[in-house]
Structure formats: C-alpha cells, structure tokens
Length: 86
Image 1 (cartoon, rainbow, N blue to C red):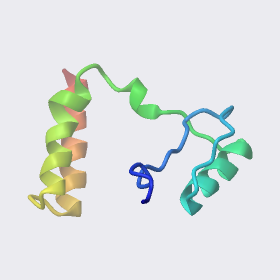
Image 2: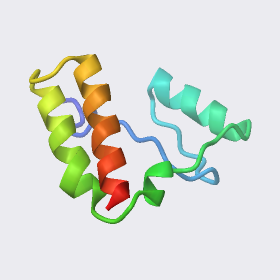
Image 3: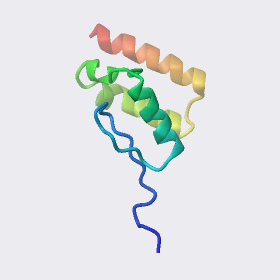
Image 4: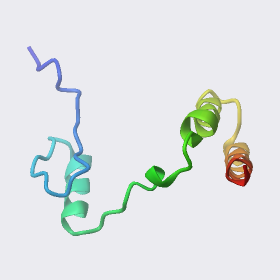
C-alpha cells in the first residue's frame, strides 16, 4: 500500500532547511535557494486587509472564469490604486 501522504510535496521557505522532497520541482527550488537566489515574501508588505477585502474576491472570480487575463490585470491594478488611496 502506498503511503497515504505520498501526494504531499513539501518546499521549505527556510534557507536553512536541508530536507528536499522527492520531486524535481522541489530540487530545483532547493538548488535556487542554496545559491542565494531568494526573494522576500513581498505580500507581507501589503496594506492590512488587502488580501481579505480586495484581492481574494478578484482571484476567486478569475479562477472561476468570470474574467480573462486582461480583465484580471485591469481589475487588480484599479483595485490596488483605490485601496491604497483610502
């Protein structure tokens, strides 16, 4: 019987983590991180409530096919401008 968690792939956000999942993508990310090519989690700098009050519903609408790519980009840009102007 296969391990019931075999579908679970793990990528650590920590550069000090030595574990690498048995997955080619995980190895690529681990190699990239080990080479010092990391980027901060920029979403932590978002204005409070942005994700819950603005972006979540836009992502949801896009995922459900309610808008095309250009509509998504336009909506995000307009919504960000309005949210940060408040």
